[in-house]
Length: 174
Image (cartoon, rainbow, N blue to C red; front, side, top):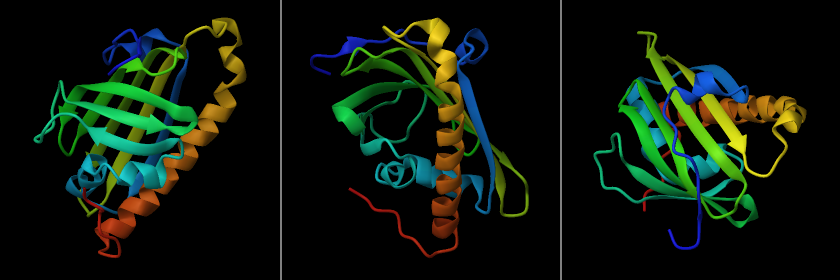
């Protein structure tokens, strides 16, 4: 992490501390294990999460609390992440600890997976953020766009994961 801006590391409580929380929920025709296969695959994020161009896990498997990764996004931005929750098949959450651009003060994503017992599961995605340098009282202007973007990305995640679970898609490794 050379030349980066520190972000305030946050935990799961941040979801209750900011007004800027965006959520999306999908029922996915895949097992929780298959959902986490997709989460753990670096390339898969580039297929369903529009801003992401590359993911680099910087900690070895098995992943858990304290695991780190670098996420390269559009606009030459890199987010340096640390996982604050990890229970494979059930939940994972990460916080930005740094960013290559001074645009993020606090950032957390929380993914919750509930096994529905019939080869499908409910995936809930929560994203919470506070931006740096942007007047907080104007953040409400971006909320509708963020809600739509998150719902669209989680739908893409559902389709991608269902294709993998059905055997019609192999996860790219490497």
